[in-house]
Amino acid sequence: MAFAILVGAAAVSALGGSSIAATASSTPTVQLVAGVFPQSLDPGLDYTTQGAETNWLVYTGLTTYKHASGAAGGNLIPGLATALPTISDGGKTYTATLRKGLVFSNGKPVVASDFLYTVERAIKIPWGGSGEFITPVIAGATAYSNGKASTISGITTNNATGKIVIHLTAPYGPFDNVLAFSSLGIIPSGFPMKVEPTSPPPGVGPYEVTNIVANQSYDVVKNPHWAAEAIPGIPSGYDNVDVKVSANVSANALAVLNNSADVFDWADTIPGSLLPQIQSKAKGRYNLVNLGGSTYYIFLNVTEKPFSNQLAREAVVTGLNEDAMSRLGSGTLAPACFFLPPAVPGHPTGACPYGTPGTGNLAKAKALVKQSGMAGQPVTVWSETRAPRQQWMTYYTQFLNSIGFKATQKVIADATYFTTIGESKTLHPQTGFADWNQDFPNPVDFYGVLLDGASILPTDNENFGQTNDPHLNAVVSKLGTTPTTQLGSVVSQWQALDEYVAKRAYVAVFGYQKFPFFTSDRIIYSKLIFQPIYGWDFTSFDLK
Image (cartoon, rainbow, N blue to C red; front, side, top):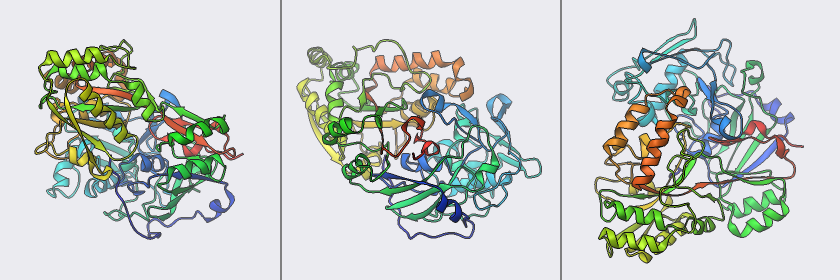
């Protein structure tokens, strides 16, 4: 997705005043180098991978995730609430109790009504996910968003008892996950209802952010009040983190290799030319990790020729050379054919319907195109500019031509790519690159946004293939009401749906992304946590 560019000078707001000087001077500092600055370090706006890896440790929600590598890191645990919310009224009411004695990073006490204010602010700014996860989901949120109500009627709070009750418009299974978003991590009532890019609000978490220089750097330092909170399952962390941002990822990688920086940001791609050197010289401190929550795929517009034809879609899936695409991505793709990635409940374990992902069956793909009657059909392949995404789509364009279509590539600037192909009302893109990194480990996060017919929008559309299958829609609607904590009871039904989608060839999945977890010699690598949602877990950074 595109990233916003924010500008401004470092500052400290009145509400965001901090007492970090003592801890900053006495705590060791890890230097992390990243290629992209977060959309915002204000949680009321940020909706990017780069922001989330910091903000989830600064703004703890009523729920949060386990600090663990692998699938265990996708498990919900209580955050600022004493327990996971109780669910009643057929899935429409969530009730939680705020822990007693909580304070923000500036020392101000936390009260239950701060949660209501936090949600209101996320809607007013608005946070990028509010239109999907908050406004249509919480009762009264739409009226508040439209200015027809002064508050959100569906949220009631009691500062004396800490009780928070949230009424939904309809059962929404992943709502426990929604409560874990950093954008709903509680902030103080009265903090400005506008984005504060260089002086974000105080939060409740192991860390706080300071010294923000837009597009260049920021510091993530230990919250001096956190240890006293003693929230089970949320560690205090060892060291502070100094984040430096440079688009020169080659220089970033070399800095970590040569121990002049400590951590390479996991969401960046190490250039293929440097991999042999890193693999040789950085043994024991470099690893490619499949977090299991990312799907890279080619969308196929089922409302436009040639991919309105089932056989034409099957041809793409059958003949695609996933191994070649992985090589173009420096070997960072794990073979794949199913839409749901391994870390998301519902990922099938059976065989792929059109052959094991690998070199592809070109002869069969050609035969399918001929059989479809779509041979010679013009196809425009939409592509981002950056590597390896442009290279992937260049290969794909050549592949389409080799099996009988007449394909050309259309390259769009990264910053506007997804908004451009999301103009479904006027554009009708036929096919091109798409990817999705999980917001949370629930199939609804993939299906409800990317393939459900109800998700098709005239602008900012994410269902690029215009998939509107009545069977798929009905299953998503039914299973989407199951709370995340009860997903085990319907996982086989999600698997069946994912197998159905693979059989229908609605998308051409070409890999699950593997990410580089690469550090200097100064880091104790054995302690590191590769969190499946947020990547690096800063609380596990420990200098020798």
